[in-house]
Every structure is written in C-alpha cells, then in structure tokens.
Length: 342
Length: 288
Image (cartoon, rainbow over all chains, first blue to last red; front, top):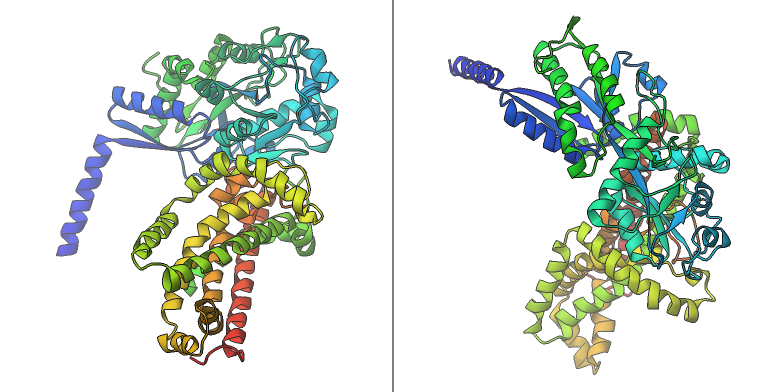
C-alpha cells in the first residue's frame, strides 16, 4: 500500500514537473560559459517554462557528451574532426560568438609590435632577449631592455591554445613541423600556467615574460597587449571589432568548420575563432527540440547584443545570415521546426 | 574500501589499456616525450617531477616539524603550546589553491631573488643548484609541499612523543644526561617508528597534491637535474589535460598516469612499512 502511494505521488510529481518546466541540458566549452549563463538566465526569464542546465566541462568534454547522447547540446571552441563527426553524422556546428587570442607581456615597452615571424621565434625559444635585433627593428623608438624572455603558455588543454598554435602553424613552417596545433601541445619553450589567470599570473609575476590569453580576459584585467601584423601586412590592435572583421576575411564553408586565424582583410585580428554550439540537425525530442531551435534563433539575433558587454565579438552580419539558413534547416522528428519569433 | 579502490583501478585500467598497448608499456613508462599532437606519450618526466617535489617537500618539512614537535612537547613553555598548536592546525586547514596563490605571488618572487641566486652562488658546485633562477620549478613546488605537509607530520609527531614513557626520560636525566641528550638517547629512538609513519603520511599527501603544485611548478614535462628548472607532476598533468583531451590515445595515456601514481604510492607505503618494522626491531629502539 505504502509503495502504491509512493508511486502515485512520484507520478504526480513527475507530471507536475513536466507541465511546469522543460530542462534542456548542455555541456562543453568554458570560454563562452559566462555569456551562455547570461543568455540562459535571460531566456528563462522570458520563457519561464524553459530552463537550461549548462556544464562548462571543456570543449573536449562537450564533444564527448553530445556524441554519447547524454546532453541535448554540446559546445566547443574547436570544430569537430572528421572522425568525430563520423560517429554522429547529423551534428551541426552553429557559431554563437567569436573570441580572440591576444599576446600579453611584462616588459617596459609601451606598445609592443610583433610580426608573425618574431612571435613564432619567441615561442620556439629562438628569440630569447627583449633587445633582440628582430624585436628592436619593429619597435623603433622603444628602449628595449637586456632582459631574458620567459614564455608563458597554458598548461591545461584549451581552445585558447588551439587557436594560438593553429595560428603559429599557419605562419611558421617550423612550428607546424616541430609542434603543430592542438588543445595541448609539446611546447618548445617556457612555463605553463593553468587557465587564463594562470598564464596572466605568470606573466605578471615574471619580469620579461610573454604569454597569450583570451581577449575577454585581457580586457577585463587591463593587460598590456601586443599589436600583431596581420595577413594583409597591417599592424592591428586586438579589439572586438578587429575580431569580428576576421570572420569577414575568410570564405565560410556551409558547416562553419573553418579556421579563421591569419584571416585576410586590413582590419582583421589574426588570431580569432568561433565558438560553436553542437546540435543534432534532426531533434528527437519534440518539446526540447523546438525549444532549442527557437533558442538558437534568439541567440544569433537578440542574444548578440549581450556579446560585446561581456567582451565577446558578435557574429558579423554575413555570418548571421548564413546561420539563419542553418537553423531553418533543422527539423524536429523529421518535420521543420516552427520558428515562432521570426 | 578495497572494493571501491578495485573498481576505480579497473575503470582506469580499461581506459588506459588500449592507449598503453598502442604506445608499448615499456616505451610509455620510460619515454620522456609528451606530445599530444604527435601522439607520443611517455610518463617519465611526470614520475620524476612527482618524486623530486615530494622528496624536496619531505626533506624540508621533516626536520622542521620534528623540531617543532619536540619544542612543543619537551622544551617549550606550556602556555605556548595551545597557541602554536592552533597555528599548525590552521596551516592544515588552508585550501591548497590558496597555497598555490601564495606560492605564485609571494614564494616564487622570493625564490627568484634572492633565494635561488644565493643557493646558486653557495652550492652551485652541485648540479641541483645550477641554472637560471626563474622562481617557478621543482624548488618552489617542493617548498609549497613542505609547508602543506608540515602540520600533518608535526601533529602526528606530537602525538607520538606523548607516548614516550616519562620513566625513560627521567632515567636518562637521572644518569646525568642534559635535556638534549635525554631527547637524543631516550625520546627519539623510542619515537622513531612513529615519526617515520608521520613522514609517510606527509609524503602521501605530497605525492597526490595537485592544485598548489601545478600553480608553481611551471608545468613543463622535462627531466632536469636542477631544482631551479620547471617540471611537471603526475596529478598536475592529469588535472590540466584531461578535460580537453580529445583523442582516445591522449585520454588513455592520462588514465595510465593515474595508474602509475597509484603504483608509486603503493610501492612507497610498502617500503615505508618495511622501514618502520626494521627500525622498530632495531637494537637501539626501546622495546615497547
């Protein structure tokens, strides 16, 4: 009897929950997590029946979870590889916002200018002094100290490292051959710090240090940032605008799986990247599927306004128009998903 | 407990086996390359880093904590004991990430200048103390570990010293021994097995410490003789790379490191057990 009552109570509670709220689960990249948290909370306020649960476990984890089917959407800073897609062929990469990797340093130089060659030389451990002629030639008028350069990099696997090493691989054949691009790589020189705060901590605490962090983190902490010479030969400052400009400098494939580092365009910041939500093209759960499609639509339109205040670069217009088509192509149990708020 | 440990081991082994088989067990254990992009993984730099930092930690912490314990239980004024005891307990309660922050912003700059240059000048003839003083590295990690395991060793040693029979000390004193001689002849031999046990507890904590170490060791998987050089430890690399390890080979290699760490702790506790037994049976140890 007791069991029966308990079962009935459970069933009732279950029904009540189902009627009141719909929980969409996601997991993945840590880099966009602050923005996603704001989005999910704002979206929940506008649609109280819907709530999101997002676990920032890292891009690799996000890909694993969506592949295993334990979450409704994944999130990743790096696009999935072909062999990963082969396991879930109907996965869509939906770009949400853009981020940039910037070079920060701790040396008595007011505005540091670097070329790709010099940057690669420093991170390969070949340029070891601040007053190296290669650096001096780019920074005429600065008094460069006779100080050893200490390279600081991420010790944890991260999309930031992927963006940075992907860029170095593009501009330096030697880097490509010796190190390559990846979320964790075998660094030829320097010290590792955990997270953006770890790297910036190393840079701040070590005179003569140079490292890379996310633009958002650098802006919030007002770090000294180097200018980089981009593919068109212009020195650019890392800003949200120069980050967005990078997306306009590449031809976008239909699945968005493209590296936008070293992009063309005179205003393009050379180390920019997308961050993606990973969703199934055909949603199996009718309620969650519809909710997710509508949320994606909201995110690439209304949601973009939240990007800049949190130091993420919004998607440029051309990309938004493309992503609209992608979202329209999504289906729920084989039927096109209704987009209420167009 | 055994069942839980067994399940954890089985699970780790399941993840690690394919990767270790692909890499070759021997090459995996003694390899010194760690290249996630090229797919070549060797555990040796991490084993080396773990052992070196833990040994530095023990070497620094053991004399200090035994001295502290002796002072508190044998020599110091009674009123001071609760105060120092409270301070030691507070040290034990500080979260390791806070130790890491302190290490990064206080200890490391101190080591970079003046400690490491000074050591290099005075002891530079030993390879351990050569090389550029970066601050981050084995020495920084070992020093942090020493501070972290000091409360464990000290408080266990205090308890051990309490068990030394008064009659032993009084006997020594009545034979004309000074206070220090009484400690050396009567107290320490009696307490030795207990002190080794305390050191082992500290060592176990040092081996597994992750957060504080990764913040100050420099995270560079290389084997270098100098204590000033940056290194890497087993727990640190697992924590750092696991979340974003995308290839099964990388994940498996990291899980394998977990097994290696487990193996090291088992070996060390077995060795320590033997040591305690040998010491307890030793001729100079008082019969208990």
